[in-house]
Image 1 (cartoon, rainbow, N blue to C red):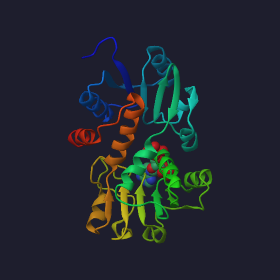
Image 2 (cartoon, rainbow, N blue to C red):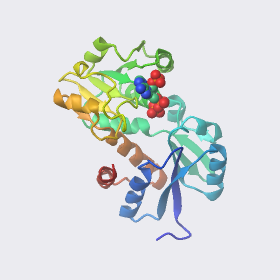
Image 3 (cartoon, helix red, strand yellow):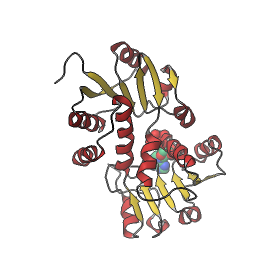
Image 4 (cartoon, rainbow, N blue to C red):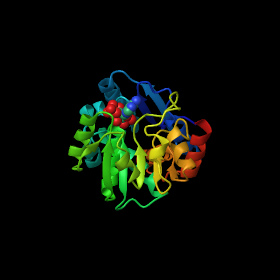
Length: 270
Ligand code: ATR
């Protein structure tokens, strides 16, 4: 029951109507009987929104496209992870101080580690945007050998420099992709409504590889279909979302996230 003690958490983005976060967080609050509620706000003036959240005592804020970089300007503090990744997807209101962090990398690592060991593996990341940065950060903590491939070489080169990697590659570099132990699609290619598309052709995918697609609409992307056909190990994008949101839930409430229930809720609404 919502009352005067109810704590508010939310997601900001523009657009935000497609977000699955409200259902996930609210399902978890309900199952643990927490007096919390989670809403989505389409925001055009981030600075004013954050000031308002501070005044209203909003407990936690999830940040999505296009604000993961912009919010950083208006926070009281960034933790080390957010600073290193260079993007914020989670804000915690700690007694009136807004602190920015990032849980995307945790989501990606947990999703991958359910299926494979990362240490020492050769990993190809397709894409060099915000998601790719969070994933590279995560993979570095596990001592993977990381190769970044991107359509725009310059963007990949910036990422490579930021994380001290060896060099940037193009998306069509078959040799480097075929030699990888793990392939990660961190671009938006293959996302609904362009779900017929794949960042790489089927022939680049090999049987002994692990293929992880961060796209989760559709649940089984073209790339994952190719990988399944080759009998490669596949990792679904919804797992990254799930574990990233679960970590946010824990930061906002201080309680352990009911993962199974949240996954069920996610698969039902997807
Ligand atoms: P996100 O926060 O989801 O990572 P982003 O920072 O906008 O979003 O990054 C999107 C990534 O997907 C980039 O690597 C982008 O490549 P460019 O740097 O060349 O723009 C990649 N991407 C998106 N659409 C693409 C397409 N049609 N073909 C190739 N790469 C694409």
